[in-house]
Length: 389
Ligand SMILES: *Cc1c(COP(=O)(O)O)cnc(C)c1O
Image (tube, rainbow, N blue to C red; front, side, top):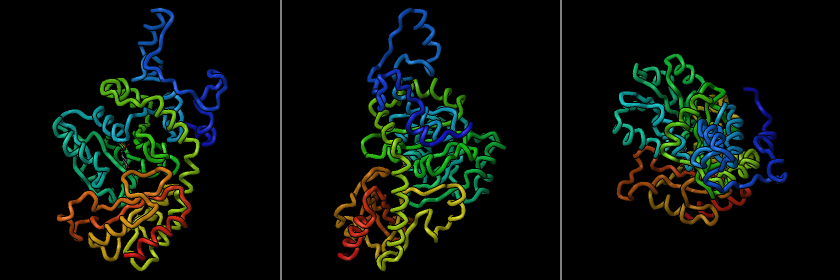
């Protein structure tokens, strides 16, 4: 695949403006079905719902514009879009795996990915070995003759563990194993796993691609062969399709994706540095901080870094963590990330207060997402809350 210019992808690719009055913004083709002049035409269209507009559970012109852009952004042959990020991760697994197969997956994957591997796939006779992703030999040792899939997420959220994507992709190819990665953290602007040899790349488009906290969606990119196989089977059968309205919101999000990421990246550099120097802060974990333990790998395989990081307070009693989060005036207390607004999410929010102990790994972490506000505005908010503790 030759690389297309990023500006061309985001502003022109897939958009046949002369088909719709030369409107600059594409139309939302809010139609469930498409009609044909003759039975022969209909019959011919039905032979390939992957290519033809027949029914919007499959193909739709607004969605098609989005798919072309997303495939090109990843440097992949093809793309599918889903009604959530989690569907873009689980549907390919349903497609690739059958009873008796084995998966090697990283520990600390996104919680619903983890849940799918631990609770759902075993019902169908698929087993998983979980490995620490920072060491290639862990993958080598976990591979068996039944291993069909290696599942990665780099960096992970909350602790930001990286995997050496290129080395693992090479290992997988040697054993004829398919690789699937969750690339939500970086988006294709900062990391392109297809170019490092990965077969399938999933993303929660709810995060950076949408970018305005108003749509839930997912993306999967890969080869024509794999994407078509998933489309014709599990995609059409489970029906995790995106609505044309949501696809339009994602196309709009793509127009400013590089700008928003750059802003988030630059502000995060400033804010993490400010936090590291604050006397109430114990540690900051962000892949592009100087003291990050996988800094070399981060700079090797990522062109930039997302605005999601974690930190802990020196006094990480449950009361102090709650007080700090509750006193913030502008930074919102919420799940998700990737939108215009900055967010805070303490790990303790998913633990019962009684079960909290500082010795539980990572329980003291507070995750922050840096949105598009002025970094000084965010620092002032962090400062007033830290000083009032
Ligand atoms: C949010 C998220 C998902 C799930 O995406 P949804 O769009 O919420 O279904 C998967 N992986 C990561 C890393 C995420 O942050």
